[in-house]
Length: 348
Ligand code: PMV
Image (cartoon, rainbow, N blue to C red; front, side, top):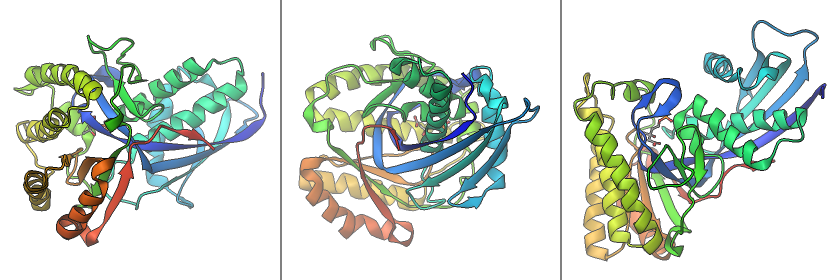
């Protein structure tokens, strides 16, 4: 089928890892499996308009608009991404693409936009592929979208489909793969079906160390082998926790994963620290409040200074009050985002 052109739109969420991906092999193959909660409010919306070229181009033909304005500095990233995926999407050389993208969260808030951005882009491209080949099956569609998103940014493979997503081969998870994320296939206790995540914006500055550099520092890292084994074990433990709803055990795994991620950064060569003094203040406040209140509020971190505050729906009012009274003071300009577990990307 030849299609002269068209327009597709996807809205794709960010995600927050419970067991972290840190370290990779060639071709974006993760060094260990990871699992995440899909978010809801933090999302990227991307529209691609495509028009068939009169002849096949040597260079990829595209224009990119970020929040309504041309954004040249994203072009190399898109070009690299297209180059990586063109073997799986030959039509990329046959069309001109206008890519319009925007985030629901404040620009340069320090929230990783690569997961939502790359998954939205991958899904739009998959939708174009489907228009060229309407026979594509749903299962293949989502798997390939996650496969492509992974080639843009590893964690983006976990932002396609489902509320809890696992990426990376794990001996205790049937159907798990290094090539794409899967919807978590086992029983999940009701308590986790409405989990909340309030993201405290501690530092909105540019990261001093990109996650690409960070992943690479796991090559030859003195603790790499131990760390990768630990991720497998934590994932196995988390499977029972997700099934039985044991929140104390959940907290132990999730907080330890966050601190281990940052411990890997502090013990690599060169070493670096992404946490800020406010990050540590917040962590201490969370620990003190949890003890005092008997709630199950806990934290996790991604590759930055911001803190994700996790808590079950039933403790929402109490934790919101705590955040307002005690934690907002540590946020840059008092900024935070109340988010919650979501269900994956949506075609618009
Ligand atoms: O997707 P990347 O390459 O930006 O890596 C992100 C890694 C962490 O956010 C730190 C952990 C994770 O599993 O999301």
